Image (cartoon, rainbow, N blue to C red; front, top):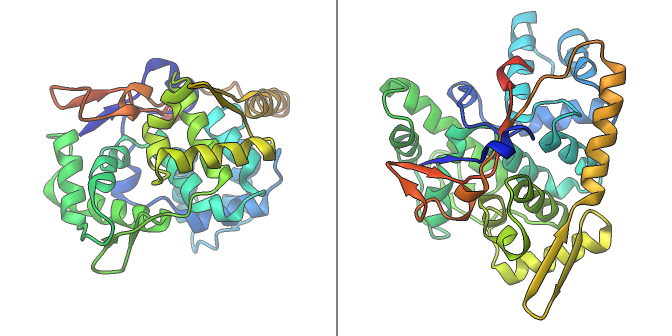
Length: 305
């Protein structure tokens, strides 16, 4: 099912328009880890581009494959400190290595509607049950009919299956089965922040698609939120049936990095795409004509980044 995010999320880096990344690659977790390890926290997009293309930190054999890898990473993660979905990811990245798989998946979910269209299938599968690339490709085909040929959909299905395996939601090689990913306080903080960017508030933050992809009961997600609050990622308060979550730390970091980026780069900032919060809550409940309004990610002008 197609899951679109609200317009407000698009400016933060979410996207409702497929860039086609998963027709060629999965979430490229290993490449992202290599790139962020090779660059400083305050790196600009130009720094990331130089690391991939000029310095060849990813070890690609030709200039063309280096440029292609950069394009795919940009589509999935933005690689710009003025895009909140990436700025917050970069802020937490070095502090929690165990969170990398889930945080990378959540960012890709925000920015790639094709991957997002398969999330409900994953969430509804029981642990240990088989999930095939064919089922995933069919989910994409239903969400975006007439967009791709059968061969392209099959390729997307295989790449999407690889992405869910890299995140820990699936396991296995040729035959994949549902598994639980490793959820950490940093991953929880990031998931809740994505929901916040989609306009969710209070207890509703724990029912968004990013929060559900933590793959833990809400009580456990709240414990992770408390731990994230103690670590300083977010501020979490819950009492008398009321929940308050604020993100001043992550937002301050994003604003500071955005300012630094604008000073460091001679280019004008490119808008980002976001993610719709309504869709995050429940794709099935809000579906209308096969499209669920209210997901949680979007980035304006993503194709131009």
